[in-house]
Image 1: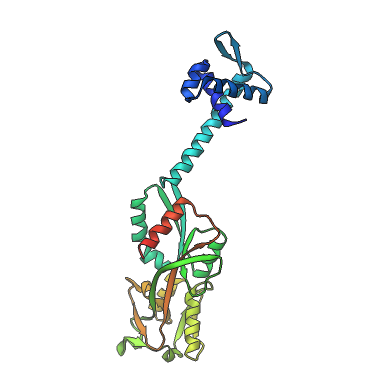
Image 2: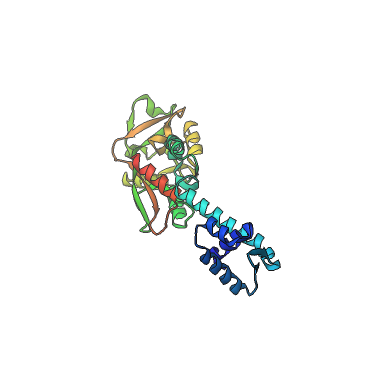
Length: 291
């Protein structure tokens, strides 16, 4: 059954007059008659009795009428839903980010985005770069902010931000009595807090130590950012972290790295082959405008 046939049927059934139905539909009366005739031929039954100028709904027509109204109602709801999403009145976008970015950078930006698009919802997920990239490739995330050192060919990326890595040490650490900076080469005897597999921070730490000619002594392996910082604050070890991680953190001080230029470059990424929803496209454009 064609939607135009059902619309003509419902219009006639509601007013029991072909001429008035044609006016309501803003089409010619012969077109209405033709559509009703086509519907009846397809169903193999009459939906209207026509006795002179009098029109009445047949038993078959009465059976069809609630279904026709339901179908047309669903179509209208679907059209409105899609139209609203296209006009950014409704919709959802998913964004992944490292914990430091989601904690210290995104709250203000997403608040501004929400003010511009109050009908849109943003689902935020925290994880390391490897995990976020996998979720982008699997279609579980629309967008992700990740380290751009090595990116799979399936994703596209634009620069988001960059920052330096620093050495996080307890305020009780002996280093703080005599220096504000440190060389990685001087840390061979220090116990390190390592981050879990999937976090770029883990690779940065191991690579920096290897470049300095030693393998780090590990005090804790696998702690996420919050727990790692708590262990650093307790004096159990040191950790290489991005500067953002030490924002408003008590009991820990950052030391600059002198002998290696350690920075992280973060990019906003998405899957090349995926067609983003209007909400996700709006979020991507918003994030790109702020950089």
